[in-house]
Every structure is written in C-alpha cells, then in structure tokens.
Image (cartoon, rainbow, N blue to C red):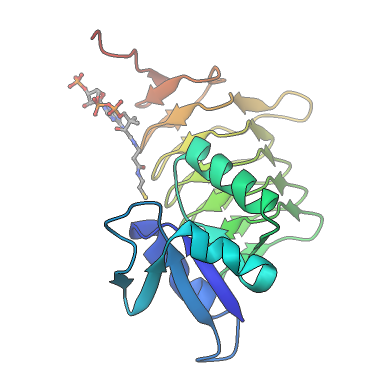
Length: 216
Ligand SMILES: CC(C)(COP(=O)(O)OP(=O)(O)OC[C@H]1O[C@@H](n2cnc3c(N)ncnc32)[C@H](O)[C@@H]1OP(=O)(O)O)[C@@H](O)C(=O)NCCC(=O)NCCS
C-alpha cells in the first residue's frame, strides 16, 4: 500500500502512525508531500518529502491524506488532487470510536481516541485530533478541524471550514434547535461556547465572546 501525507509539519507527523498501521507491518510505503521548496528532498522521521509533481505522476497509485490544518489550504489541495485523479486515504486510528448510524466524509482523519457519536455526520477532510469528540446528532461540515480534546456535545451544527481549538467545549443544542458554529468561524483553545457563533467570527473565553480583530 502506498500512502502520501500532504504536509510535513507537526500534524503530518501525527497522522503518519495511523497511515503506517493501515497495512501490514512494514508494508506501507509512506511519503510526505510539501509545496515548500526547502522541504522537498528532505526526510521526516525516515520518510521522504516529495513535491506535488511526483505525487501527481503516480496518479491513483497512492492514497492521499491531507494533514494541513488551515481549511482553505486543505480545500485547495483536495480540489487539485481530485482533479488529477488522486484518491484519498481513510486515516482512522484503531482506537477511534465511530457509532452506528454515522457518516464520515472522504479524506477525514480520525486520530487516536476520537469519538463520533450516534446519528452524527462529519464532512469531507474533517480532522479530529487526539481525544476530540463529536456528540450525538451533530452535523459537521467539510474541512472542519477539531484540535485535541475539542468537545462538541449533542445537537450541534458546525459549518464548513470552522476551527475548534484545543479543549474547547460546545454547549449542546436541542432537537430542532442546534447550537451553530458558522462557516469559517474559529473557537479559541479552552473556550466554552454557550451561544451560536457567527460565520467567520473568532470566539474565546468562558463564556465565549467574540474576539474583535485588532486595529491595524
Ligand atoms: C483564538 C486564537 C485563534 C486567537 O489568535 P490571534 O488572533 O492570533 O489572537 P492573539 O494571540 O493576538 O490574542 C488576542 C487577545 O486574545 C487573547 N486570547 C487569545 N487566545 C485566547 C484564548 N484561547 N482564550 C482566551 N483569550 C485568548 C490574547 O491573550 C489576547 O489578549 P490581549 O489583547 O488582552 O493581549 C488563538 O489564540 C487560539 O486559541 N488558537 C487555537 C490554538 C489551538 O488550539 N491549536 C491546536 C494545535 S494542534
């Protein structure tokens, strides 16, 4: 089995053991892919870093897992890979728990000790970092990122490209009245979110409040 992890940073290194466990011991041919000229040709933890042209030349011969946290960048990479006929890996740690009646989109990464609870669905290229939790009856969009220990309780809608920081807690919604995190919103590490977050907003604190951009 051949797998490419797109990215050569910290999260890419965390996805690597999941990818390596997708085949028999020693049987996975793993490379990293970088768009940074200074990284191409180097190695990360013993695995080569290649550029996109080399990946694209392999066509469907290698499954791709995109380990880049930034949603717009991840979206652009996914579109380029799909347009070139590349297919995406199901990078899901053996210790993740996924309940029945859930849906997980193409290219999602579910790290160690993550949970997708009953009746929830998560979108394409969703990232669930260590111990992240998606509660019951949630709808999580495409290119959403959960940092480690982010906890989303039941009946919550998280729109595309949102980022939920380390240890953030999202108050449960209710049937027909979900708590909503808007498209591209950022929930800061440690925030306790008790109300809807508008699209594009950044919230921090307990209870979470909008962090206004600093004047330039
Ligand atoms: C919320 C966040 C995106 C803001 O980043 P930023 O726009 O660069 O903001 P700044 O660092 O300039 O901070 C602005 C103010 O907010 C405060 N602040 C920043 N993050 C905060 C947080 N999570 N909780 C409370 N206050 C926070 C800062 O102390 C600063 O306060 P000040 O104006 O009184 O000095 C960022 O701090 C954050 O929490 N990112 C998530 C990190 C994470 O979980 N990473 C996981 C890696 S796997």
